[in-house]
Length: 311
Image (cartoon, rainbow, N blue to C red):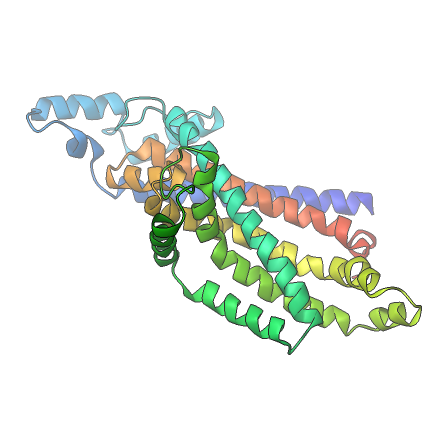
């Protein structure tokens, strides 16, 4: 059994590497088709000779296959060259913004699960009641409202009525409150719906009726039996929501002037700064793949049937 689990883990790891390789390859060729970064970033009074010398220095005159081979070798060495715009190593430029994006993403996920899981449990237990109806309306609102509109409304409300919460930038610990709420609103709605659906399905199972017939308290039935067996669906959603969080961070960081990776990617795409775009996308894809690997492995700890091959 252990050998089977090990083979499965190795297979998933190899597939994850293939996914990352495919993503960075697509980004490499698409970024090359976006235009000439040297001509775009060169001073107005730059001569054609100076532009050609800059292209030669960055290796942009080499054949595409040669540039691609050099790009793959740089990835192996974790080097992405110099940023065209900042004239510094691309890894340094990305690293400065990565911490801010991780903070915002973690805060957004915390908001999503801190709101979604409790509401989903209560809505399932009190199905058809006022709490259930309120939760479903809130979930519909959370999935229907665009991030940028919600962010602007929060900024307007806080600016008018709450003085101690900053409405932009990353100047204090309180600065993350509004971006985190905005970023977590959409996934919170999805988490609530998934939790409610999974709990409703679990509560109808025979072993739940058996647990109640044995005289277990309702709290023990809900949290020890029903919730644990419902978490597989919620954890699967976690892997999916990491991607949504990172993609939503681009808009949220722009609205709240949050100096993160999403804002950097937008600026680098506009400036056709290949090294920064490639480094940013690689880190993002690796992070998403890693989270999904963790989610896959966590299944075996939550549901013993997966370890024993019973399902």
